[in-house]
Length: 74
Image (cartoon, rainbow, N blue to C red):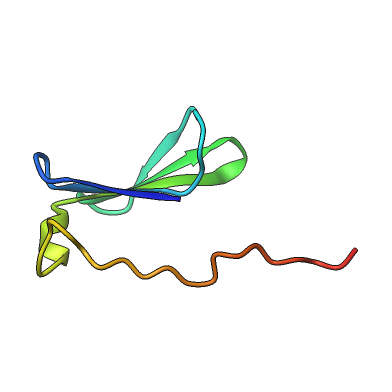
């Protein structure tokens, strides 16, 4: 997962899957869009006007939880 903030355009992008994908964009609002690849895999989330979400947009706080993959017994 990669999180990037571009202060020139005030956009935050959360990339959930690495690699190149042809995506279908679904707009939730004017400011939030989801990128879906084949099979409805969520590739990324774009947030426009992201500075409104943070006290200090140059260095937003990011909290990551439960990133280890779950092991399912065979």
